Image 1 (cartoon, rainbow, N blue to C red):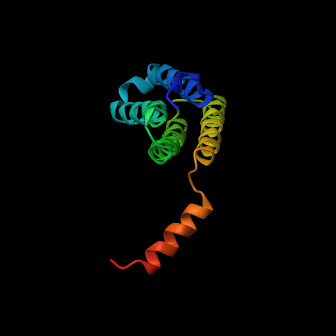
Image 2: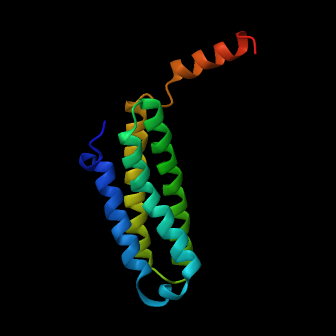
Length: 135
């Protein structure tokens, strides 16, 4: 924990951010301020939450921020599909950016698992305790 710049997933998130900024600075896309703002906020959120999560003091807190990053990836993929449908990017660029997004999502899933997120034993323990402890 605490050395987020060395995480491959953070580095990939930075690459995705750079690519998204490049496409939003080009062509007709420049006039679609709402979509530009939405896409940029979502893509910046991915790397930012990875960094914040890695700097947290507990695995539980880290996992929370990594899960937020996964949600932001879903937003980015959706917004990239919108940009393609509107003709701002071609199918090749969509494919490239979706693949990078999916790579980041898979890496986050593994990082969450490594940090103890979605641990079936913890979930079952929590369920057991919540059923039998008085409020």
